[in-house]
Length: 579
Ligand SMILES: Nc1ncnc2c1ncn2[C@@H]1O[C@H](COP(=O)(O)OP(=O)(O)OP(=O)(O)O)[C@@H](O)[C@H]1O
Image (cartoon, rainbow, N blue to C red; front, side, top):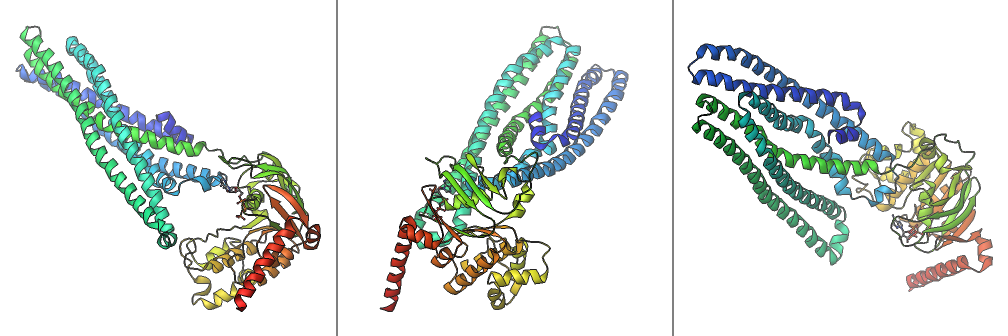
């Protein structure tokens, strides 16, 4: 387990951990020696030989001082190791999460990840502060006592040894029960966390629909199930610890009975027997502690496995010799891609070439793979076959920094960080000047928002941008992307929440920006689509048509139908409004 711990925390801490382990073992052996030295001391006292007792007092005092010093050193090293290991594990987990494919985060349960990345790390590294010392003591001290016992009375040592299998069995049984119930509680807490987060975040939906009550009842049920798991844990763990305690008492009774038998039979000295009885009781103390520790240790093991599960997720492989992009054209070359667990491919041989600069609009029915295409440009996932290239270079051959610098995305679900509007826009370019900020704000039609809000740039947006309207959030995220000034812009329904006037203005902005940027835009607004330099029609994960608006209309195909349908709906809306 220690090897696994070092494996998870990283080799940087292995020296510190080994030093701690050495101090712990020294303390446990020294404590065992103190217990052993009690035997000749008590024996001398009980036999009325105070001078001999005094003689034994000296080594006993030395051993006691060594035990005390070793205890202090191991405790100090334990806390230091725990603090260093916690920091190292947080860093390792953080770095790893930063390298994972963006798509991985879509499938992970937020509550469970939060619990693991916060409390979970502490539950692993607590080993050094509170568990390793008592655990090693619980094994090494009784072993030292056992070896010492051979010197005083080998028959009692054999009796002690005979109890070991029973103790091991009882220990295994009890820790298995504790681990099972702890795992149940852990799973129940994870489920509650996930549902509480969902319940808090989705209140508007839950309150608006009758099914919301069912979700609330489900949450209540989950919390009740967590309480029940907690109650079961209390009952079963107490029973398991009781069972192990009884086994230890049985072992002590057995050894004392053997000693009493030997004394009655006249083959053991009574004074020695009393001294040995004290030793046996002390032998039992650390063993008893093992019952409690075993359960905690299994919990650590479970948490360790969960941390390792995350660390085992492969980050997207980074190229050993990254290549620099030559320009900002985008190319999809026979791209096939399927989400994990999906029944069929979402992109099924997409071939598409977008020359540098200009606006390309992706259109197609819902679920045809438009968003998936934009995400592959940002390398959320790697393609199953084929390649996505920017500036002639496969996105897999670009360094992470180059890739990040190349693409400015605005995705459907805009997320703003809890901070001010300025903090959020500055993410696009942290060292932007006031003029650059004002430029981006003007192009994203954000200046109107800033003029309206009393705190302007310093307005706090709330968690996820909850204090702003959908259209305001979209314009802040657009300004962020514009400020980044990247050669490729990917806009996935980035103007869907804007009113007609702002939408038209932003469409104009996008057109202007496309003079020296390649813009890939998914939009349902006719004006945006119509004015694009080229339009690509996607259906069932394949490119069906591509060309300008005029060319595609002349084709009388899918795009024509799409247009007709839109026109019909628009006219219908206009007529409804006139009535
Ligand atoms: N993370 C995911 N895991 C599994 N399947 C997914 C995932 N994301 C999308 N899909 C599926 O992939 C298909 C393509 O989705 P995509 O979002 O690319 O479509 P779209 O054309 O952008 O649709 P829309 O216009 O409705 O946004 C859909 O059938 C969708 O259900």
